[in-house]
Image (cartoon, rainbow, N blue to C red; front, side):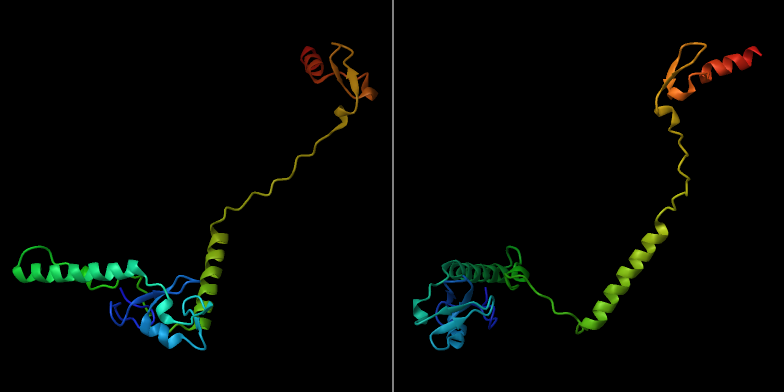
Length: 183
């Protein structure tokens, strides 16, 4: 385990992990000494300013303290097993830092270029979506005659009740077809 400022492993003598009480971030004693100005300290992680009259009064992060002891113990055991030829080689696991690694970009990021590329990708995606979208058929809305909804009328031949009071003398479609078939 290492301090996120100096990137050196915590140690129980000169690199004791201390917790900033207001924010809870942990740094080694040496880095905290360098950060104290006028009895105040500004956390490098969250920029919170806190009072710090004595560095020794800051609480020790015993969880990290214990983890460093366990890691050292495992490394020693691994070395003895490795030298004796028994057991598994865990050096590739134990030598890696136990924090999230942030990989630096292989080449510097050009913000304008990155923005331009992102915009071009979005534009190309929207254009391709338009090409893939199915074309909708242009269908004329049917012309609907609402005259029959205005009132009621009865067919004079079959007394079929229908709409529209003005057409009392009209024959319904069924009777009209029947008459056409008779003739």
